[in-house]
Each structure stands twice: as structure tokens, then as C-alpha cells.
Length: 115
Image (cartoon, rainbow, N blue to C red):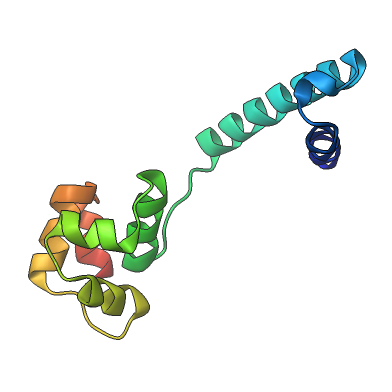
């Protein structure tokens, strides 16, 4: 990963990937493919498992590239309410729990055991 980062930095400084030497470009390509394969295999063996409801919601936000504002709108709740629930300042209500099940497809059994 360190070599990949160094090659990416060099490419940026030179003005693009096409400015790298062929050997550097080939190395970057090979290392990038290896890193991607490794990540795919690790995720297959050790998927990310949230430990609580907040982590589950935040994981779904990352997966779906949602901001809190967009998520609040999708769930049909006010943004401040979502913020308070995610920060632990407010307990999730039934409407919120139903919405994250319906809209984010968070498993009902997980919700019941972590709410």
C-alpha cells in the first residue's frame, strides 16, 4: 500500500498517470489489482458487522453514499431527530426503527436485538 501511495503521489506531481515510466505504471497496475483482490477476499471472509444500531445505520449511509440530511429525508424524519438518535441523545422510536428496516433494509432481528 505504501508503494501504491508513493506511485499515486508521483503521478499527481508529474501531472497524470501517463507521465509515469512504463515500469512504474505496470507496478502500480499490478499492486492495485493485488490490493483489490486482497480486500475482496478479506471482506468475503470477515464482513463488517456493526455492533449496534448506530453503526448499522452509519454503515448503510456509507454504502449508499448518504448524508444525514439525505437519510433523514429518505426516512421521513427531521434531520435534527436523526442527528440526536445517531449521537445517542435520543432513543429511537418505533417509526424510526420501521423506517430503517424498510428504507435501509436493516434486518428486523438485528433491530430488535439492538434497539
